[in-house]
Image (tube, rainbow, N blue to C red; front, side, top):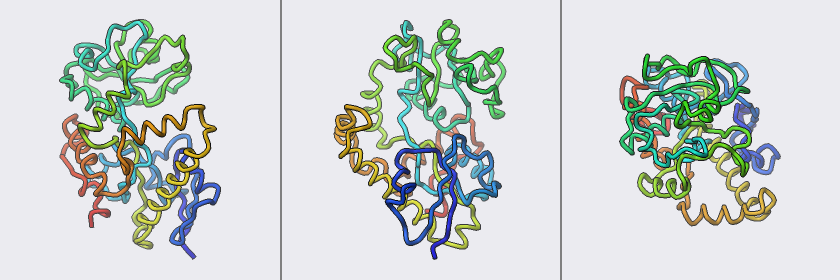
Length: 318
């Protein structure tokens, strides 16, 4: 009997073949709990053998010397960040360089995606010290929680005054732009008062890919060390099963155009703009991206020491 492993993952569409039993592995019986929020302490949560984890928080723990999770270089969440910078529709700003000297909002300082977005600004010459940063909730529907994570700097990186929502500050003109992984309600409506900062996000993202060679990783997978010690082949088996599920899901999307009327066009554009294997798992396929992320963690003051891909994923490097 293969080991029964329970993971906490967000409700990604490409998990559907596993959830329906359309793909299986002889090496692992995978049970997936679809969660709205990732476990706060995946290493200590008795419900799970592993989980989807923030790449940033996992890397920070490794930088502190923690070994309570075995990270897998399988990035279950990836995404370009150019489209994650929004502004008011009537704003005159259209470039990341335009944000120098401005007030910028974001939903969490140490979040993986926001770290990648700040890296985009750094590529355009806008360093952390070149802007004022307000960290807070996107809308009034989101909770008021600590989003600084201990990285605040008085006068430079602070909680939003009065915990006002970022969207309100964008619309009032008190904030030039905001970083957000998920758009606020109504953002995609024709009459939305908000828009992406960049006029052509997709073109910027394609150009970025050609420059760096990767789609940024946001969340990775991690297992408890005791589980891996008892079943050393588990990381590979789980990664291969998830890859097969994603492959089957994509094949169905290419056949059944029920998601949107233009899903086939979108898939064709992805095939044209990105090479096969752009989302491949494993250390070799992701080493450049992981190294770049580790460099940004250190450059942005999130980690005290600079790590590399093999230090962050020693199990995969061994």
